Length: 304
Ligand code: AMP
Image (cartoon, rainbow, N blue to C red; front, side, top):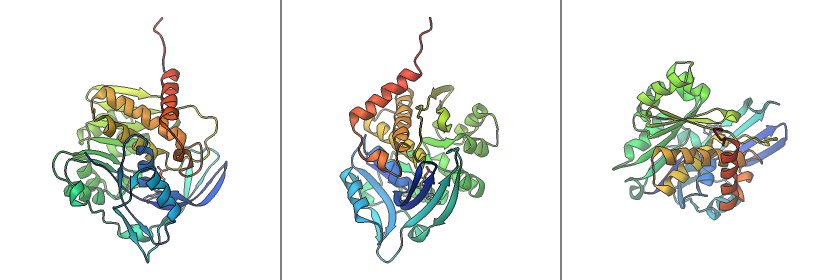
């Protein structure tokens, strides 16, 4: 099963209470791929950049065995750019600018050799593009989908189509309420699962994540961090860790999907410790495993 990631690759200007960076590597597909690369290799990235995309970023991704053979480079175009500023409460951010540039005409094409029986991560892009990827696939695929409030508001019907083919959907709590049109999260989860996904993960920021499957719920903690440098890409990093671990293990049982949620949370906790992708660039198996154990410790208790 090939591991494919579809989404944005870009350059970000980010300001947080801890400092700021300009022209830093960003994009949902970037964070997903880098995070997944600690579990499964190669990660096949399907995205688009302009001729201005720095070589050093390509080299860093390739060093992590993120295969860029299907990264389209529009030589005379400009790379997608995004700017965001976080409030003192880093759960709140303002988008300062979005320049779609070459991303405006992104039309993901899955190469023939990757179409069959693949593990596909659909990063947060227009649901109609996610659907076009799904329609190119053949055979037995496993699909992990990310989305956002904008698409729930503006492209709900397209998103509903995508959800019919989605095996695991990862969204945050406010998006879940909006999608289900239901304020109670447990009821909302039931409604969303009926739309298609057999697994639903609802992220609750610094309060962890909930996993829903059939009639069962698993509650995962968040890692308690004293200082968050840059939350950009944390959600995508969660998706990458979750999907990469599941792909590597090839075990889609509820017990293993629980583990995947903890791996996703662990990777996200590394992401926010530094700006841009820096917190994800120098990890190794033992650092990741130690954090997994720390997660286990903070939620372990004895019943007397
Ligand atoms: P997150 O913090 O998980 O929302 O992801 C942030 C990343 O998403 C940044 O690195 C941005 O480059 C990228 N991004 C922001 N807006 C968009 C957009 N409209 N489409 C695709 N990617 C985006």
